[in-house]
Image 1: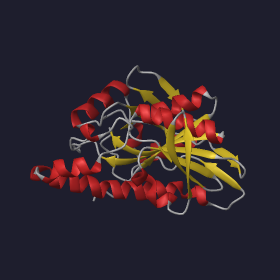
Image 2: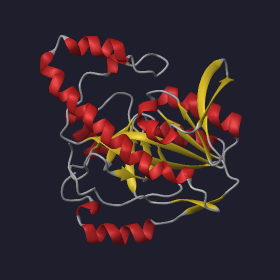
Image 3: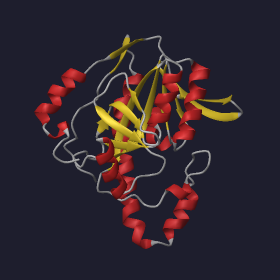
Length: 270
């Protein structure tokens, strides 16, 4: 996305942020529902939260609770995210639903660790758009991990800044229950980073088959450096995401959800 994205100019970033900087102020009795894909994306945040196992629609879910929020790791992909969203809404009746987790950059200026709040989420399956409660960026959700060529095509087709695999399903679930939706995504792979072949290791329930992936990589040394870089980037991304989500551990009277930032971090990838 060269030549047309407004975030390339830092001063313009701040101006647009001021215009889009609507805030949601939630009373301290409110329960926020957070839907993530995998526990590793949010582990720094939930290590002190209460784990609770509950059943919904014949499926077992592990929720993490504190006084402010409840979080579920529903798995990778839109179907897993849809099921988890329905479960957390039905069991906890939240006032706000948030899709949190990793995203790939479609904009070459976005670096690993940049935290984004999308104002609009697009479902690539049908081109439908869902507006968020706050935000600035445009996020597109797809069915498979996006490689470099697909990232370029998505940027061109949707004028989007980032890509993920769950936010559209979470947003649609919140919309169906007339609940405010907010996204919070962190860049874990940049626009020119070619993801290792990972889609075949996502199980039907949305869980990642780590042991099978490790065995696959072990006999393919030409992928080792790429996988090692992805692991470093994922750690950096999870840290950045959870630092922002740390607001849900605050003891202040009000909890405010707002735009976390409108320009890339100064640091590049590890």
